[in-house]
Image (cartoon, rainbow, N blue to C red; front, side, top):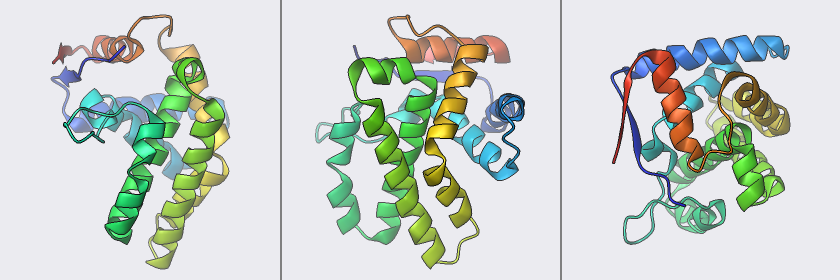
Length: 193
């Protein structure tokens, strides 16, 4: 079932980032994850993907968003041929997507795909991003290396967050349920397209 495009109306990006920053800090502290760079990065991913149009950025030739990881990976060769920066951005998106989905929507991933594939692609993607970041002497290289090495742990932390702070995934449209919960907690509105 295709999810509608969900847009949270009202909160500016900084408020959404602050909301997820507080939530991620609280949950990660509970799990003894004290790395503020990782907490900041993960809360940024959550804030970014709280809008479904940002979650499904890769489209097919007709412009329809691709929701399947397998279909997304078809674009890897194209991204790689487009240059190192574009390939890095593509791989960062795949890493972020697999972390978000395998963490907050693990039940859906396990129902419709392979959790192992999400984990492997997330690790592979963050590893490739770390390699590029290291080559250009970016200060972010250690973050991506840590995300690659501890992907299962961070994905599990997001699954714990879902189980303890959010919603049941039995809903027909879990992304919609997720957006409704965020809107309710932030006291804002949500629209669908």
